[in-house]
Image 1 (tube, one colour):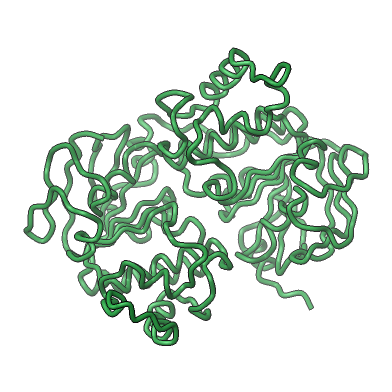
Image 2 (cartoon, rainbow, N blue to C red; image 1 turned 90 degrees about the vertical axis):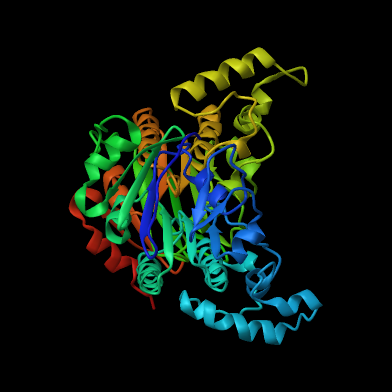
Length: 478
């Protein structure tokens, strides 16, 4: 990142946008004191800042909500809110009384719409609930500048609406918001101004009311995006996967067929059982009853290793915790599921690995300094591409993608859409979970709607609407 300059007024909601790797998160971390700039200055409330710690930033009223949430999974909701929070000073004296802490954090949880026992550990929460806990933590700090890095990436439409109401309240109270998002509808709904970055550089700032979607996208990617609609369906009449009354502790009597070349979308609210369906098919959840037939053969998958051997792949919802080894390299992460094919006499064949990895890095446009770079140093979108490329190397017959474009910019989304189309054109079966209904309508042949662990309805994409999908997604089966 270099020579970035812009200003924001008190009480302004400024959208900071750009492709993955543009430098948005770096800007936020510099403002929050996590990174130290090489040169330049930051002026906050007429005070010039250069080198300061995150705790000092907090004391000045600056807070950051990271895209990759930094909460402690094994600690309670309440402890995650108060730990290292200067506004709960009694903790400095070692006075940790759960009953008192739970009482004091309750108003902040209610403010973001969480009606849960504060003593529940964070690891027991859904991704959406964890996101809301992170927001509640920041609000409890009485901040005057909040940097929100993809805060809606795991939220349902109702939760997003509540968050935007909250942002409106904060704005009225004079709190300044830097809102990082790839969702154009959100940006034009909530932002007063838009700052665009590309390749680590500041491209421009404009008022949201004076621009439009197409102009912003062109500034972000430096080119016009051609594909807006799915050009062709590759769905055949041949079953590649049949699921009959599959049940685990978290899904109930799920039945559907997946055709070769089909992209089957999966819709539903948080907790509907979308991710749980993938985990059941991939052998991560114990089957209670039901049958799964893959390529005409009845299979009993009891582990991820067994799922891979049968030709099934899974890209999980949380790439950081469930998908990638963050301290391994791009190359090492890409080959993890194909080690048995890249060795000779028990030793990895380096030339074969280099050839395969380099070809994929180029074809799916992963931005990395080298294939030996640690994956944790990549942007979120490029990390996601590394995870996708792992399964491209394995070449499964059925691939379950759980919200693969969460936190991914519009350019990277187009790349992922192209990958999905390419796989379908080769006769693969794709199960595609997404929280964005327009994305499901664009990419899918049919949409399987879930609620409370049940399949409520399977809709033909060409004949349905967002309204109909939400109607079924909000149904409660008796």
